[in-house]
Length: 164
Image (tube, rainbow, N blue to C red; front, side):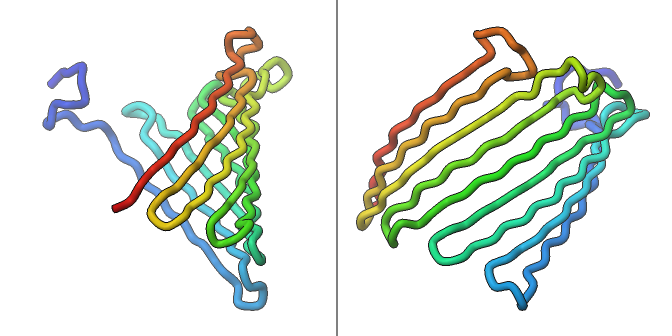
């Protein structure tokens, strides 16, 4: 049976297996540590092993997080890795601000020549009753490992929502 689309219900797209665990030790209130692993069928004969580790700590109005991710494929060009961190602060019950960064390398086969994608983002939100005003600014450099000026992206969003 041959098909070119995933919409054919008789087509086996492969399999995916994952496992994760998170602990929140009682001796350190607000701390959670987690680990996850997965295996994704890349082709009918190869797979990609993925692992992630994260740490999150919340104290007072602050929440800090850190995560690493690594994918190991059947060939070096199917490997990638990322490191992410973020911090948020609940100024009060109505207002929260946050900042985060990520470094991503989608081809670790040539670490000496590969340029890492670098992402940064800032957001703020204010809620009053059923209304929320929120905004974010994001900046990405070297998207997909490209050093072309066109590979650098910025985005801005402003949202006003009402809940009835």
